[in-house]
Length: 338
Ligand code: CP
Image (cartoon, rainbow, N blue to C red; front, side, top):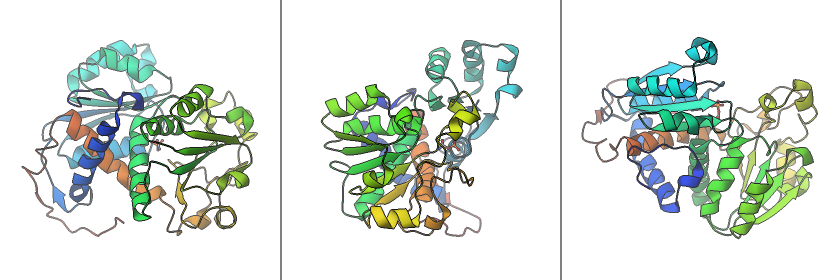
């Protein structure tokens, strides 16, 4: 695909070469994300960072990524402070904000809303999550992380075994990641969820048609063995009609040190898109794994900055210009990256 000026709405718009291109540029961003070098590649450019649903990682890391490339960030962080609360349409909002910005990231609770917004926008739009539908930049950073983690264990994405656990019905991260993996070969998916929260049948069908193996189960401990990666998800409380309905499923599937040791391969990478629900009745990923070397959740969040920098650099066509204006940082920095 031609990244220059492109909207990033769905993982289905990528070919495998496109994903590899994002990853190659993400690798080049490391000295900037690690605060070893600074660049002015996007000096003067403005990101419209529009989040109409709660977010910590996606919103802040997109903003940091843009800042690290030298650009400025303007944020809208909820519907109440936007004129959408006065009845303004997505069309009008897109026309207006795209006059103020060079690129827009948008999160919205309705599936398809970011695509609708992009059609009216005069600048590229990146989907920061549209309801239960998709979260393409998360899928890219997840796959980037999987690739790095498996490489350190001398394994590859092709042929890997991955277990996805939790609310696979509403989880946009697993929808996007599994569809991005359509580009790879011979993957074994073990989909572990309550029956009512299974992965949508159309996604399972696509995985099977592409030659992947799909096993579906509600028996977590049986499903955990024989996997290179276990990808846990939170019960997506906000997608249920009531908290009481979500409560039925909360805490059914939990990974902790004892369950991991009993069921997983010693090399199994532990991932979660975060936020994990650390309340006692949920706790799908226990703090007792926080020091485990295979816990990749904070490497995922760090990698998110690299991947999001790469998307901005490619879309705004500065990937080859980042180094031109680069210099070393002028302040004291602690090394805090793995
Ligand atoms: N993974 C993710 O989308 O996190 P936030 O909701 O905090 O952005």
